[in-house]
Length: 412
Ligand SMILES: [Zn+2]
Image (cartoon, rainbow, N blue to C red; front, top):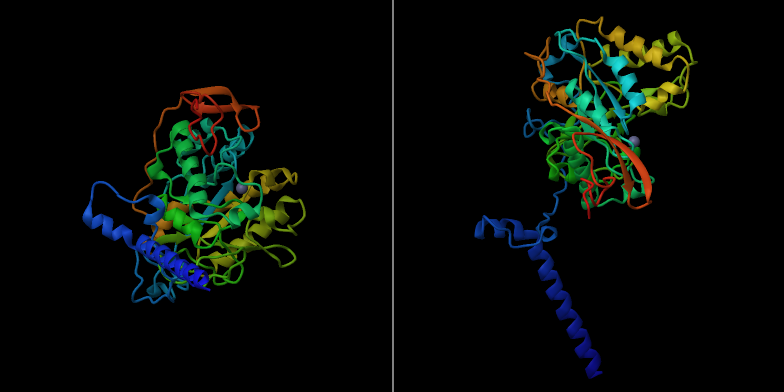
């Protein structure tokens, strides 16, 4: 009896000490800052701050350029009645590895297309590492396209991403950022966004990782309920009203993190699809039928509240039918005939959303980077599987095939 009492007391004491340690851990960030500014005294995992639950958004508290409520259906309330003067953005994005074959298609699609302000039409490339040709990535980058992140490994299914903690997401996307800098000469300061593989977010974790990585936006979250009027990008300072199609979705206040919602398309049977290639019932393989279908989806935005129109896909879609590429190209060319339609990267469109105006959206064109890339072709080994991998990079070959734990492919 006596022993049992002692045991219980001991347990209580141990629990109390443990809780104390934890609650202190949550507060150490401010303490250590005030005590010692130059050298952090605690391990990074102890520094983690608890997230606050997001509150419903109030326009009085949430103001542009850094805060935007998810339920705001126009760039500014005073644009009501002047919807026709809001510039229509079209954001064309491609996911996964960039290679010689799809690069040729990207070139054919964008080559020579100009927006009404005389600036070249551009898109966003969410690049994953495996099989990516970094020399081609550099070419897209120099042509003014946005290079964004899509992870190193791409994972092997949705479970990996659904259960990913902040550290895993940071490692996957942080390593991809390092690779883009080392092998494609992409300036990390010009990388702003990411898309999760399989569009599988993991609640607050994905968005916390975005903040930690110094990125601005995520574009992985589809909406089916907010397509008419369509949803505009917004920040996570306050609670989102967006429908959660592939959860878990965030519920914490994450100030300054932007969501570029993937406003779904409607296929010929009325089903919603977050990416064009995910539409189960596309029209027949015919240029006019495909073109008309794209136009119908576009008009929901153009004749509505002018929310950015996303054309999200994988280049592999072009091989599904004889006329898919031709129809897509025809539609892009058609877009250049409007006086108020702008094909830009997601990050350029977000610049507009922060400082919206009627009429012409920007005062000048974006400065394109002007990097030099000496292409080298490397035959390196992927350590985990002992496979040989060919890799094209700028300037200098890595020693081994770069991977998550060794993003620069150095001799270990
Ligand atoms: Zn992907």
